[in-house]
Length: 124
Image (cartoon, rainbow, N blue to C red):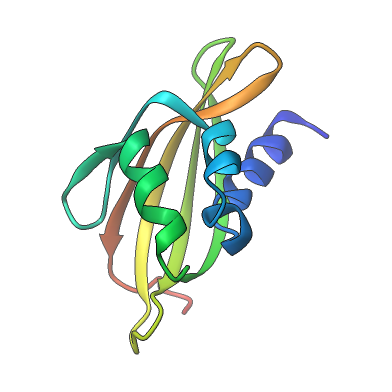
């Protein structure tokens, strides 16, 4: 598996309901110094993720148009488009996403994530 495929697979893991419900899986994939700027405009770290995500009803995600940028030997940035339908919601939201992944030993961990809400994609 090449680096881009490996990072995309890790990113997609974090969108899976079974991973989002598992504090141990989340802890393994998310760096201790993680920071997120959410679509809500709020920022939060690993502690908030570990307390919030396992309690939520997971949304339905789709992701596409991935681009991987190697920023250093141990840090990469994954850019992509995403749709999300929250449980009980009627309208899908669209976002442009950016994630920094850092290699720590033999594993990659998410260091930073930002989802910026945007209009529906032209081909939707």
